[in-house]
Structures are given as C-alpha cells and as structure tokens.
Image 1 (spheres, rainbow, N blue to C red):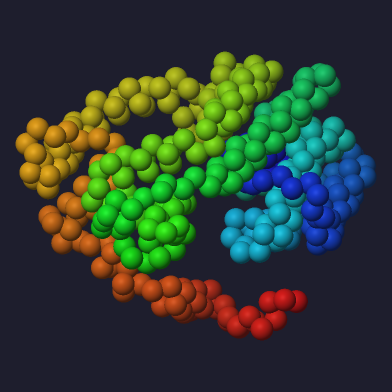
Image 2 (spheres, rainbow, N blue to C red):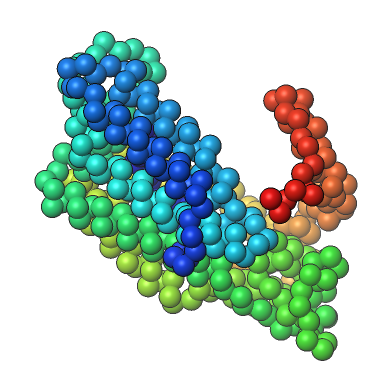
Length: 372
C-alpha cells in the first residue's frame, strides 16, 4: 500500500516519449490493480477486516513490482533505442497512475473506515495500518478538495520536471576534441571506445569514460576541461528546471502544513525535522574538517612531488587523479591492474554461480530467442 504514495525522490527520472505505445502487459497490470482497488472499495464498511482491505492492497504492490520493474528498467539498460523509448513512455503512465491512485478519495475512505473500527492489530499489521494512514495524511487527504487537486498538479509537474531534468543530462552529447597527448595515461580500452576525426579524439563525457579520464589522465589541463564540462551538462535549461522544482516543493510543503520541504521529507525518517538535520551537520562539520584538512595536505604534497613544483596548489579536478596516484604509490593498489582480474565474462559467470547457490536459481541461455 505504501507505494500508492510515490516519493518524489524515488520516481525513476527517464525521458518522456508520448508517441510510443505502452506495452499491453503494463496496461494489464494497471488494470488488474484497478480491479483490486475496486474490490476493496466495494466491501461494506461494517464488514471490513485486515484480510479484505489491507492485504489486497499490500499484495497489489508486490504484483505491480513484479509486472513493471523489468519493463521500466529497460529505459536505463537496453541497447535498443525503441525499447528505451517505450519504457520511458510507460514510466510516465505508471507515475501518473500512482499519483492519481494516492489521491483517490473512495479508496482513502475505504481504508479510513477500517481504521475507524480501531481493529486490535499488533506487530506488522498494526504498523502497516498506522503507516498507511500517516501516508494518507502526508498525501493531503485530510485537506479540502481544492488543495488536494493542487497537490496532485504539483506532484505531476514535479514528476514531469524530474523526467525532463534527467533526459537533458542523458541526451547531452558533449564531446571534448583532444589530441592523443592530451589524454596521456587514459587506458587504451577507454580511448578505443571514443569517436575520432583525423588525429582528434572526440572524448565523450559518459560516466565510465569521464571517471577513467579523471583517475588516470596525467594532463591537468585536460582534467580541468572535463571536470568543468561534466558539471555543465544540460546547462541553464536544467538550472531553470531546478528553480521551478524548488518553488513547487516549497508550495507543496506549505499546503501540507510543513515549514519547509526538508521537514516534509524527513518526517518519516529518524531525523524527523530539519532542525535535527541542521544540528547533525553543525556537529559533524568540525569533526570531518580536521580529516579533510589532513587529506588536503596529503594530496597537495603528492601533487607537489609528482609535478616537482613546491608551490603548486590542489584543484578540484586533481582529486581523483592524485587519489589514484596515492593508492598506487603508497598502498600498492592499482585499480587498472585489479580490473584485469575481473573481465566481464568472469564477473557474470561468478554472479550466476553465487546467486545459483544462494537462491537456488537456475540460469538458461535464451539468447537465440531474444527476438521473441
């Protein structure tokens, strides 16, 4: 039942592709969920039990997870662009369904009618009902209809903006034109994956390529370029989106009676409120500052020894390189050498072997049937 209240931070942010047709399997899963909800609502209030009100909704969550998680995950991992777009279009449909369902007044009244019976629950069942009613309060179901409708609009807009934000980053195809000497130290297998024009390497700033460059490139100017451009992906377009999201989150918190959005987010967590979070940071910062200062001095000294420049200073784009350098020179740990012992085929084989023993899973190669 808890997933009927989608946490904004957990919405999978993928690109919206409305022209794609949502797979029938996802439509069927949502239709089955709607049928379960209709059956719960139809139970007479005087006859409500945990078994006919709460358990079906909990079961609904599990079945939706099983039906939706893999098809939607394809947006992040599929090599087929059409499959990714279908998954992205499906994600928006699913998110909208969750938002709409969390604000259904008939479903809320059904669950509240059961809660009003004050059933003698204990343990997990008591906790489930308490948390469900708490989540309904956090969804604004105790508020007037006008405010509930506004909350629904805000959640949908936040979902749309989050999708757009991640899409802008995913679609950013920034390349840095570099000569081979600009990329000294970068592993050959990383360089081989980059596009080239004549003698120039068009270095792409995807996560793995960027990480390999920052860890290994001996050219400080190249690291600076990559560090700067990596943080500017999607540019001002995403800055404007963030500003809109901050304003909407603030409005959402006010409607729900919270002082700020942080109070809303952490209410159901250990911290409970923003004052506790602030105090935690105020107490923590002086402690970690001492270690940070020691690390800064260590990294600065490493850079001065490496560059033979006793006055040079440490910049943000130096961190990964000199961390890797210190691991090799001080602790004899070379990540590139370690990686040689973990080729993809061996890792997958080991994963299959371990999970087979732990969970009793049997894997079968169906590559030849992938088209089906």
